[in-house]
Length: 468
Picture (cartoon, rainbow, N blue to C red):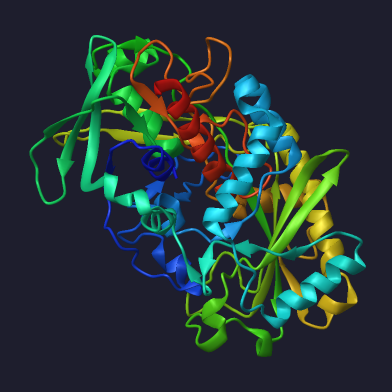
């Protein structure tokens, strides 16, 4: 999104991506098979103290298009509260009116589609939601003719793509002349030697909530004590780099299902067009979104294993969790490499656990409607016998998972404590910008793909105004 916006404004771009150029698989129903593939960085979290010390898989897309290579393709535009949060952080340059206009422009590039296929279980779930008095709907998708469409595909459709040079390499650090960013050090694909690349005008990080703060720290921008401990030369002290990590934690409420409705672990025919996370919606409290539902016609914890039973899952996550975590760089014995510690800090704020408990009762209410009772059988997780607060919390600790929506680690703000300013320029240095989910001051209340693409276009347009 950033490269296309800048290219169409007349700039020449060198676009550096680490991963393979073409996604491994564009079939919606196969997206879970992409986790752990060459399209995935293969991250994991540190043990989560409030989730029974479990280490969670933390997939992030690797290659052109980022996580649009491996996600569930859900296109869920930001709500009014999400736009207000961005406006509050960015001031006049990020007004509600201008963001709404940008969202329309992005949507015209993306052209999200309605689902080509819904399972019968999903149709019954939607009917149950209506009976329960809540608004649910099939998710729009970032697809073309039913198959995955990445942000890189949208770039390639631009007539300005000829002014973009693409290079497969892994960026190791940002190069500075004093406090001015002049380029990057990279290791090209298939090589071991570091090469130096110079930028004529600016360096823009679009590496996401994990890699962008990591690159800043490895380049000398971050908490002073951490840099000293790592033996990295200090370019600019900034204690907030890598902090404020926010993510959606989902608790699956799982029901066994009549085997005739089972979604195959090796889908064929129309099932291939299912993105598995087919439908859902939010529960409002006043003017804000409190809880979100993702319904899938599978056993959330075991699918796509061949042994996964026939099941239906109603996944509950908080729209605006209070808990915060961090991304830290650690030492490594390998040349040109650093380690990473990803700690989402799930349920560190007790208010999040209280809201999750409410969400489970909401899921149970939907599952109790007649249209679903004709399909589902027993509640497997948390389990019908688990009714007390303590019993449900033990289930949350054992089974809650990340929804893979990390943001916030290079947050934007008008105050000097924010990592980037309203132009998404890194404070304290020049020639360096961050434009990705890491700059979001708060997590979007829904799936963040559409919000981040809107932010990308809006931030890139502000650079055009700044640099002329």
